[in-house]
Image (cartoon, rainbow, N blue to C red; front, side, top):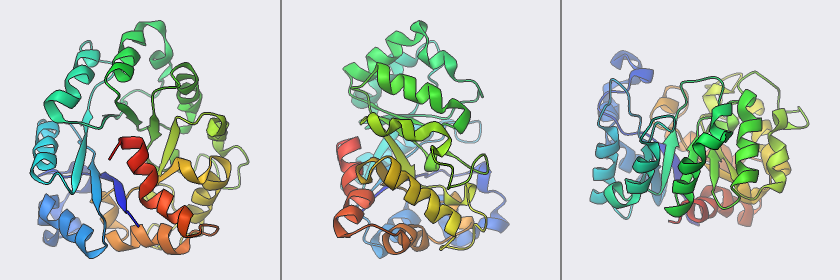
Length: 276
């Protein structure tokens, strides 16, 4: 069975999980050696690097691209692009040639993302289509309608939502529409990562947290087994669960997954979406 981790970070300094006293020096400052060790121990074939370009990590696109070149059999990378920036379309155009990126990652600073579906963004989406880049979004429930509109308008672009769609405590797993996201069941270009469990868990230290298992089960049932991708969100997730526990939550404890279903969620879906 192929196992592909769709969401990891590698930075020298990762502010969201500082200070060092909390994360432990044994993380090697979050660098690649520790990640590869975890992957080897858990028989994870590949991981998708998700750069975080911020004041504390201004060159993380270049750093992740270099790691993907250094370990081509183990790592691939996204590129962090400010999709609201004036040169966003140009950055998408050179993402594959310059960085060999398999997709574009965007962490919106704005709560309202309605601008993404306006006509002014047509060149942006044209670049996604022309250069065959996955659109990997950090999107929250209030903006699910924007995601759905984009997916309907651009059916040949693959859209991936991080971290279970970030339901947090906006709605519970038994909410029948998953905050409206299950409308994407009819949109085969929308995918959701089963990752970042701590953000929606009632007990983030409990790997069998029923709230997370119920969220995953709802997505599997409502979207389909071929639309959910596992990701660890290492290293911030390591403040709550070990790398192996993040994997085993899906591999061992999600109800209703047979061997074929596990193979899809743990690797085959990611291989299809990111072309790896």
